[in-house]
Image 1: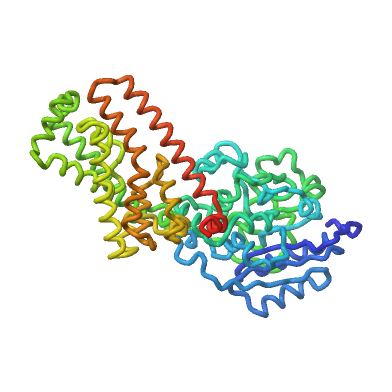
Image 2: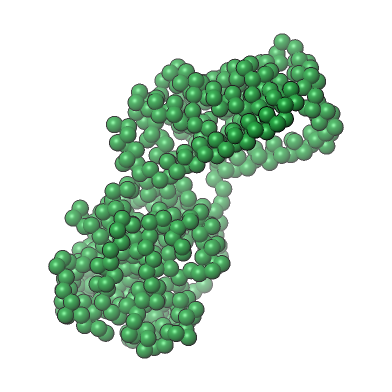
Length: 524
């Protein structure tokens, strides 16, 4: 291995590893390989763990006694990830690297995260001293082609060009500490829980992907997958001369029997190897099912959507021709509503109130129908009355029954929006803006308001006024349809859709990217 005694470094290298007891000996091997390549480089190795004892730490210290390496164990007692189904596939220690900005010393501005299942062959100073600007991490990828596309599509990420492996990362702790908090990490975890088939690595791609610098996997993260793909150019001598880190990711390990692959020849010979890993396909399949299965809210949404589809299908099969004739003739449609007598407006207002309470009923369709039947102005009035009744019901039931009721319709882990509404009086201007923007989930936000210290009357007044422009565009569209002004209706509909999509994108971008600490500053 390379001795980089001629290299100097003004400050210490700071390295982070996260392990459980199973990886104690592999970590010792990794530290020795690091020490042999960095004999004159002072280094601090932070070991984030939840179960190591003094004997374990003493064992590690004895293995590196000849190197300028200081071990700094960090006991993690917080149960940040307890109860999440992703822990059925991966140990909680693997998620600790996500919180490095929280428990590392405040003087730590960057660190090099290293998995314990690696072998270091050359100096890591070029990687550690790499300038990554304001990006969050520098990491390599093992994914290419269709598999890379699938992983990016699965997580909904556009950048970087490739899905990255989180086993070796240069972490810009200052930037991560500035832009993230424990709340934002946990909120993203729960928001994306059904996507996290690869656990924290998926979450790292979601959180840091747009600000990641890609490094050469053949130099800093060579694994069996990469070797197989590039075996023609990676002979033994090339790997010894150029590869700084060999990563033994995956199921098979060189310190266990039954290794399948080529790169184990570079790993130090083991006196005693552990048993070959056993297949756990059923357990893994069950864990994956627990991760991707629908939650209560999604089940309600799915059931509601299927019910609407079945109802529409049955209605069309039984009343199809009559319905088409009715809707195509405004006078007949108005006459049909008039069949309810003095209660026709009340029937519509109750329908609108139900739509406000049950989120899966599309609001735009109800608003267009109101404009079609009653005209643009009366349509707005009746829609607003329905909104007020529905909002009163939501606020009353939420305040009476609390989270148990609200979480039937609301994502129980959406802590950022709840923080957003927490300061009642100062939140009102922001509530007005949110309800004014087309495309925002207004009815869902009413459930959030019901959980917070929001006064009912000011909330109803503010939100009713803010809703008017959006509702009017829909009722006006319905009114022009009733008068068979199809060209004008088309223009209104297209413009409304465009504004709604823009509003939705602004809302999503603001609440998915805005760090909680910045949001808290706005509240103050």
